[in-house]
Length: 268
Image (cartoon, rainbow, N blue to C red):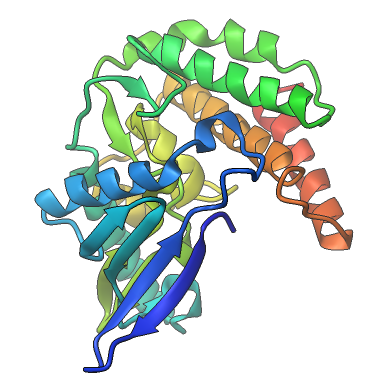
């Protein structure tokens, strides 16, 4: 839905995946500049920690070549309830290790970012709102809701690596375990709670995931921060569809859904 991906088979039978960045004349959101470098960096940092990711074979000039995974995306793996519960616990442990990776700046490496999480997240929200104006996307006045809770972001003092796109299609499973995590192109350094919007996509995080991560629940302040990150994701999804040319009844249903969720998360 952003880069173009090809599965390649070499003459000796080895398989690899080649991702090709959009051409330079394609309109992008502010944070989407040079996403492939973000993806390559995240893969390298995750591999150094022994996390399950494909091996990067080459990264240059808008190209990313990596080893092919042999399993299936989680949502297409035909899992039983018991298998799913075990994998959710395993995922919690993987994400906990992921959040042990720290950075030198809050926010996106390529920007927007900032010296503090409050500054960086504020810049991230401002950027997507500016993108909305640039692409003619009408949005409710969300800034007061974000600004009114900004002080809660000061609780975050260490910029940890957040994948921010860990829905089931980006998690491959094989032999009953997580074989690999893919597509960390949206990754940034910030609040570990910002992982919740994608690992629990528009739903409450389940007990198995929380147990694997090592937490039992969230405080009221933490829940508010999670709601802010969910709202930010809704903004991204509402705006990105315009430059990407999404249209039709399915897009209209998605827009209505994201708008309703945005209002819910920000109490608009």
